[in-house]
Structure formats: structure tokens, C-alpha cells
Length: 263
Image 1 (cartoon, rainbow, N blue to C red):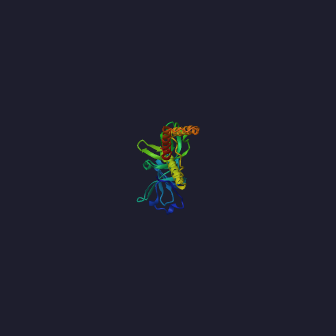
Image 2 (cartoon, one colour):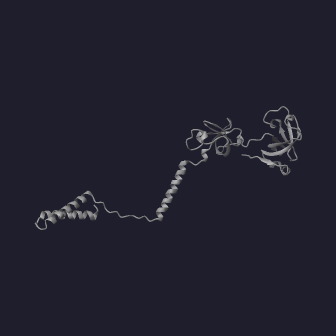
Image 3 (tube, rainbow, N blue to C red):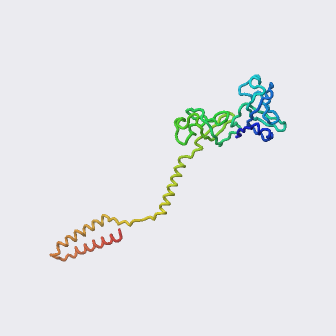
């Protein structure tokens, strides 16, 4: 995209015609008017030519109706022919962005000029404003464009597509905004790394848990306790009971084995 450059009367005499670019702005003086246009002194030693169609946007019948000899005017370079020593000028300020300069992927600054239900029109310096469809405003759901922007807002946009024949420009705002999913993922990854560093810095302490007795173990313990209480009451009247003693020994061995092995 070509940008406007302004040349002052002090620097103009030092310029070579090959150094002058399109859209360069000069302040000059009308030297002569003709039926076809006007000659303008812009300080280069040779006058620039302004065609009648380039004096103003509205059609005119006579050049003298708009400009007079000796009048100071602002002009912009349209074309330079160094071989013929000729400079074509315009008094109509050129567009900041011409159709042939607009390409998909370009990132531009623009100003919101109009809101519609389906989106917002943004002036990017072209002949016509581009359209940011409501679906291209943000990654979130938008019911009304007014939720995001208002007329006069300056916004950053990216060119999605340009139809030079229909003179339509599709723009996007959300393409310049990081997706929320990516942001959340980045935060979660950062948290995981911090937790990992904390685990590495603090030794992990593992507490030895006491084995929880099973229902079988509890029943065996209760049986042993009842047996011991019964035997205590029978000490004075001892009787030999081989069968009971054998059961006691079996229960004792079973309980002892389960406690030691945890099974």
C-alpha cells in the first residue's frame, strides 16, 4: 500500500523526477488555465498538469469556475514520465488503498462507519468500506454487532477476500484474536508445570496405613474373647476338654496368620 508523502517548497528543487512516487503531495500555484485543465508550479522547474477531470470530483464546465491563476492549491502525483519530463497531477485526494493494492491476509486499521444487523462496515481507506460479518467479530456468539463495536470505533481488521469486479471487501476481526480454547490450554499447561515443580521440590511422604480387619477377622476375635471369658469362669472347676482346646488352637492360629499376613 502506497502512503502519502508531502513535499515542501524547500525540498522540491532537489528532487529528481525518478524519485517522485505516486500519491506524493505538493502545494503549488496555478500558472495557467486551459480548456483541458491547468498547469501548476510545484517547485520542480517544470509545471505539473492537472486534467479538468482531476480538478474536483463533481463534473465542471470551465476550469476558471473552480481555480484561478495565482491560486495556491494542494495536488497529488498521479503519474511521472521522466523520459518526457512530464508530471500528471490531481487535485482530488487519492485513496489510501486502491483496489489493485488490496490483498487477502492484509492487516489494516479502520474506522466503523455503519452498523447493520448482519455486521459492521469499516472504512479502511479504500473506495468503499469493507464488511465485517457478525460471525467474524469475535469467537463468541454475538446477537447484535452493537455488543462489540459502535460507529466511530477504530478497529484492527484482516482482509479475508476482495472482489474487485463487484468492489466488495470481506474483513475479519476475530482472525486477529487468539481463540479462547488456546488461551485456556495455555493456562492449564502452565498450571501443570507449576504443580510438577512443586512435587519435585517437596519430597512426597507416604504414610503407612494400618491394615483394616476384615469381617472374618472381627468374628474370630470376638469368638476368642468369648472363649477366654468362658475359660476364666471355669478355672476353679477344671475339666479336660480336648475338643474345645483344639478349636481354640485353630482359631488362635487362624487369627494370628491373618493379622501377620494382612489377608
